[in-house]
Length: 408
Figure 1 (cartoon, rainbow, N blue to C red):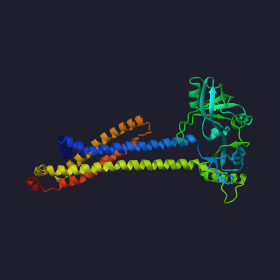
Figure 2 (cartoon, helix red, strand yellow):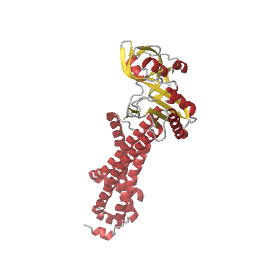
Figure 3 (tube, rainbow, N blue to C red):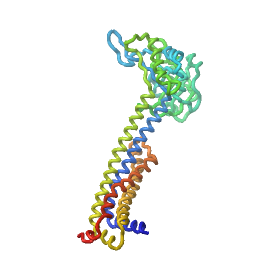
Figure 4 (cartoon, helix red, strand yellow):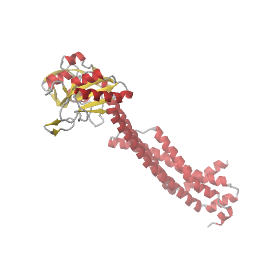
């Protein structure tokens, strides 16, 4: 009964000073809401990066043309095509840690269907590309190794190309023209979304590599390719695969010790992991900044409770004189502090969720609100109430009844 009585007294005291109670809670409200929104932004960023990593494929290594020297002048990275499809074939055959390899040769050009046209990326690549990128078709099929070897004029299109060229019409079996060369659409890829650079991965047409080299884009050198994608056997073998790729290409390109290689090998898994680590750090930083406002709110509660103890010193003396124990006074003021924190935390959680949804709607950011963030922020608000409310409550409980009754 004493606990219930103390709780009733605490709630009544807060209700008497409604404006002051609300202003005291304001710091907690802002703090909890800020924590939820900031953590949601960080979680959304991590989720977006995770999806981008998944859309790239697993255990990927990218080989790009490197810097070259012509006439005494050093050319920039990728300025000259130094890779061939034979390089890709050698990597596959001579690197035990490599699972699959795919070359890419193409460019951006106009694609025509009937009276519709669309400027998009057209890439020539073998069928292995789609297994490396873990990119299945939504309808139709992928062209075969035999079609690639025979330079057959078939194409697989992305979802954005379908929307802009065909509308609601099925593209399967239709004829599109790429640089005036007719191609039959045999497959439609599933949707991938944006890449890590923000490019639309679905705005693309894929054709057999040999067809691209011989009948569409051509090349100054036979079998030239722009990029070689390499997939390692497993994540654990990524370092071995990277070393083996370097060794094979240095041997094929006759790169001498100390000489600048005319190719560049990049571990995409490491790059994406670094991006995800940066997102984790950003999330932690945002959450830490928001937690500061919670602590500030707790300090505000402590200050107001100290003022309240001073104002109600005579009331405390009267309660002690009629039989209230120190524990009753401690519980009463501690209850006031906890109630302020919990109510403020509840309002903060509500405003944080609403604020996150509103921000996601207007800014089109990827914001992910988790239940664990709601629980942690609400629990932290309660902890703030206990921690910062204990000192004023303890001070009130240790007042001398006689001195308290004399207080004016």
